[in-house]
Image (cartoon, rainbow, N blue to C red; front, side, top):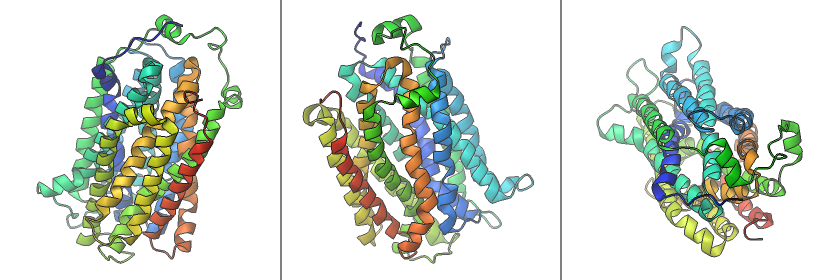
Length: 439
């Protein structure tokens, strides 16, 4: 097998630069979906059901996109056509969702908003999945940790910008409370406009600055055999999933169950725990201030994650991916559980340190471990199937979130304790993963 050429820092940077814009959009969705849907009339105990749109879309879309991109060769490349097409659709959805109330002549505002959430997240999944496979396609073993660490940095830098946008616009003088007769604050609406435009720009940058290996060279670098090139059905691929993927799936289940729970309940939790709002409050200044601050602290954990990502590659090379992963997830569990005890908005920033450490590792280390164990010709489809380890726990959290909320005394902040426990279990499960490089 011919060795893949070493890529420069900027080559690796450019191939993941579009993920910066995608994550700006994704963070705006994570930080403001509950806020928008609540403003449109959704009850807090039903929010987790609306959030099911995202994982269901990912569960269905990513394996299909992965299988399709494995078999696609165009002038633009193998993965880039899907990245670019998904970005265009995502930007359109970002324009429509915060304006759901203005399309009441088509559908009820809450139903239209939920539909746009589903369309937006489907488009995000079309764009995100090929980015994971693109790094696996292009980098050699000695740059694998670095490639996914740079991608993690860009994801988190985008998350910081996306999370802070409504707050920054409010500081700049954009109204943070809906005008009379309106439902969604202008600060949120303009954030989605800016996020969509940035998403398109960054994905275009990646699309025209990255040149994928042509088929013959790709097969040469990856030693793709005639047997590997066979057109296996999705069923046969599922039957031959590498063992390490099943092991990572257990870790992923508890980690993403925790993350989904955090995204759904942080706004309501801190609104009641710090701003002391009523359970049915959806339009007050305090409720919207809490919404902005939820975005701010999400920005902080993404910022801490971006900083941690800078050291993640070296830490993984020195101490081993598994050891670093365990430490990171424990830090996240502690951070989540500490939020229950904090009643000061600025104190929540300290909780974000641990959550950011966990988030950076979740975005990089499972993919670095997995990509080493996957056949090169089926990198895309297996990365797509692996996305089920992200979506299934979110679906479970969405379906049972209301039940767990009732068991937690009806207080949204107690769901963050549930999330912390789940993250800690994920850390324990890492020890059962067999990392091919370390073995």
